[in-house]
Image (tube, rainbow, N blue to C red; front, side, top):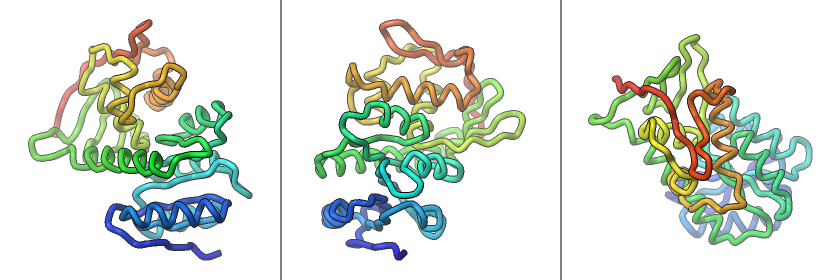
Length: 245
């Protein structure tokens, strides 16, 4: 099974995995016209090979795929890569969206969706990713140290004192960096959503809470000693943060 490449461009490299040939063709053409190089796959059999073979800036994953579904593929990607992931879900399935975020997806779009909105989401994620990657400049510290953890802002890695390395998704990295830079301050859900997802939080959207829950799991914070919920407000990160490097 060959990988189909569509419309080379300078905005970034996108890998689209969807078993619907019409969606692959339409999105490939639309995103290609907007400056992206798009490669498409009808299923996940070659996904890992393709990601490791060359630079990919963002992955779009349909949930309903033959063979391994989008959830399994998302989980597999997060074992070795922090590449931004947008999942395509059924419009009525909130559970699918929550599970996708819990497994490490950065965002989701419900079908049927607007190609223009998807393009805006892609640009937002890539912009945030590039800002994060360039965030550790000469005037910035290399590491943020708290408790038993050290966050490497340059390599975007989270290292525990026992030597275990955590690979963070783009959203997890942005969320943790936000908490660390505003430690001991209450952050409301709108502020968190605006910074990590570039849009305000919908009262019915559980995305922020799911991402916080996933970050708690990463930090082994089951007792919520680090990230505390503040009723009717948001969250507060309780830690002493040291800057080094």
